Length: 245
Image (cartoon, rainbow, N blue to C red; front, side, top):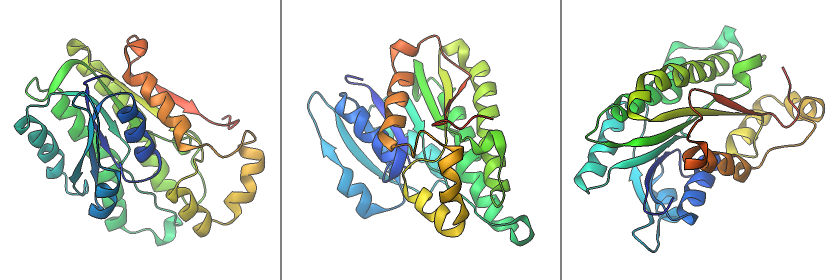
């Protein structure tokens, strides 16, 4: 990671924050993207050898902000070596009360923003040859679930998009992969179990190895970003903690 520049979306909490801190600890410059200015300032850091966590406030539901991130990097003379798309929202409602506005926002952040990231990665102006993109899918993409139909569909779309984008970007040796965790100890998890209280009890049998820590996902992302994973692209790595479809 030494002297690499990596964009991390959703960097102010949960898995995104764990990835930003992990990559920074390994010597990278991080462009930390999030909506909460105070939280961004809290994680901002200056390190050695041009490393640092640089805040960039943006709501990725506004898709034009994706290009703004890359333009900001270009203006500062930073070509991108890696992108981790961790920004995402959930939607824990039965289909009968779902509405099109919430569905649209969820797909814009979870899926369409990733498509825009891959579009920008195709440009030599912004992204170095041999770069790596890591996106967050979910085991919900494999099995669905009551009350999370739209969220599950968005994460399935992420996995398919990763596979297709990997085929398009292979000519520039840009690798595109996804990680599909089961339940991870994040704010989103806490919100989910408040809205779907039966879920916490069901974890005892559906995820027998326990609730996953964000740092474990960050470790895997670090590997996928590195040269050690140079032969891995177009795949979704499941981290199920015993969840088996």
